Length: 353
Ligand SMILES: Cc1ncc(COP(=O)(O)O)c(C=O)c1O
Image (cartoon, rainbow, N blue to C red):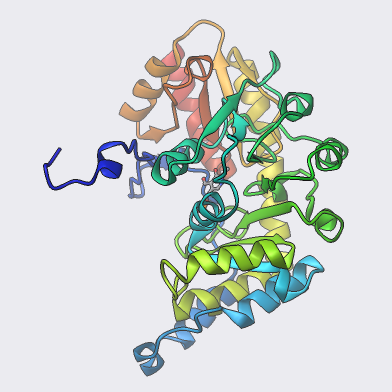
């Protein structure tokens, strides 16, 4: 606390990211990173662009990258916004499109950055409880609102909503923006990007951090009606004209274009997820059916905090959220490569005995 702080800073409760431990002996299953690494083409492009051109500012509108994203998603470049990770895209979205007189609605158990943005921007919000099965019930969102946002699949539950449900919401909710955060969509969930031409109030956010294994590059994007994109551009250009550096713009294009590499690594993760779920169930865990690269799980006898602490002592890092209370009984575990999942299961066997 300092007397120099603004009132806004006094009122913030910043997001706390998962521990970013490094080292060969750490089994890091706490931040939903992809174990397989990015496309080799990304690394090649990065190497070839480390040169004197770095003295120049990057393209402020990332036009080549926007064009590549548009092409791979069957939309036009005017439908695309890019940012420094989807966290930044979401921040601009809260600022540009979700801050109105009526509260923005999002689930009580969801990406915990959403309420953080609201406090930063003075956005009023209402958290809608997931149902008893931890699902988003679309009917609970059919009410007056200043916008709606949730991930599909949801995080940290991993549960996916069918497109027909989101379509029903869009049909009923035409006067405010509906944001679908598709950070994990490539791990077994259907995208709503094809709905964008039909619903001017729909904005879809995506990231290269998970399926493209580029969390370290910080590239995210949004797809929506050009009017929504224009609002995001206005906020971006009132905040930082150059959110993506020259290397990130080039490398992101290479990552997006290597469709086979992305599909391969997602397939391996989906296979490992089935193995991991089976292994956890054998050890007495209840596991929610996940369409993401993580699972939400709780043990039938042992406290989640105890398990997380004991795993950490053995060099295995998983994520435990203390809030809201309903989720505190669970652990969120990233699906790693089989060798990491096996190390986790071995550590769990030791912890539970
Ligand atoms: C649901 C959800 N949305 C967005 C993000 C942000 O991803 P990034 O800023 O790496 O693009 C995350 C990161 O974990 C997430 O879980």
